[in-house]
Length: 269
Image (tube, rainbow, N blue to C red; front, side, top):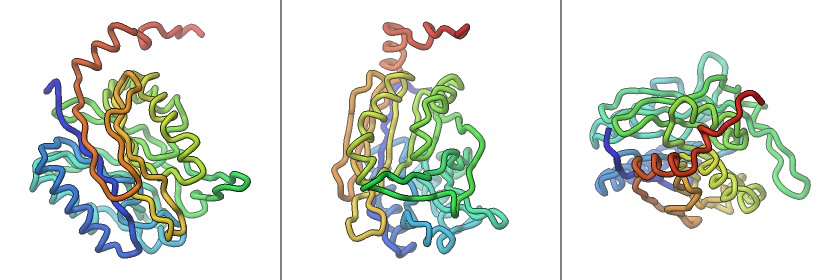
């Protein structure tokens, strides 16, 4: 495994045109690969508007058009692709699913969102993901040639026990395709990302769709890459953008040795 590699997070604006969404994602993956990124990350629901009405219309079985494209591009550019998430159809169920492909185009992981976004904030956002989406039930950690990595989706990040379990499964990089909104984003996006990174002493990459005030659901944007000290290494604005950062595993080990939080846990409590 290499001690240092580059990750790219693609923040794209999602429309109601699936073909357009896929074409934009393909262009951004090609650009990131051209800048020597080893891992390329897409946002939550990158091929489909984040809207309950669209989930059944855009849902695909695996393998399908979207996953076929991701597999092909991963192989073409010899990169790992964390395919954000898409509405996945299995039998009659729809899952919010992230498909992960290695640099040979092989599917190596699939994460189905565990914690569904069922909230109603007075004066803010109301959304019931569970009215359409079925919850997953498995923690997703997988091996890459760089390090062990994990994937969770959006609302999953709010449950610290999940990311701690991923860390205990040896993840050193945790990737969160997410679509925080204009209520939860300004309030919690940065603080939650930085806290999860520093509590677990991992690199954390959050991939958001670009902001679109014309959409029925407006994503916050501000995709982030955070280091194990809780520092933001790279941050997007609100429009279409690719951000990059170096993942330095020697630095991660240094932080864990100097501030040994994981070793100091009191398991008897």
